[in-house]
Image 1 (cartoon, one colour):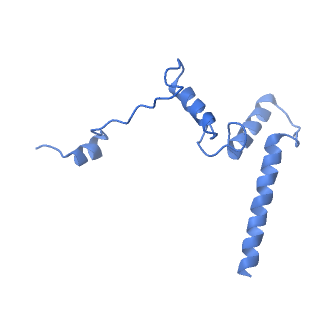
Image 2 (cartoon, rainbow, N blue to C red):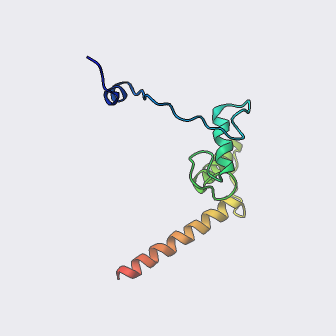
Image 3 (tube, rainbow, N blue to C red):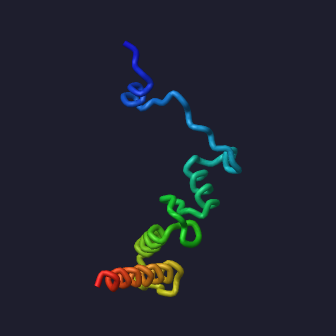
Length: 109
């Protein structure tokens, strides 16, 4: 009994057609595929960890904050430097979200 292409794909996870190979400025670099992914994300101004739009630099706000806290813990720092980029962006995002929730509450009242 022969399997249909649909059955074959369902049971084995195989597809008949292969994905097209990405050909860009990073294709022939002698680096790992993970590094190529990071370079492509950075070129497209997306977070190098999750692919969301990057706030500034190469990370989204969520991963910028995670990296900051990871470095604080690694270095054993107690003090917080509130003037740094991640704190300013986090405060601006918090202010925007509070304003949106207040507008939503006033519209329902």
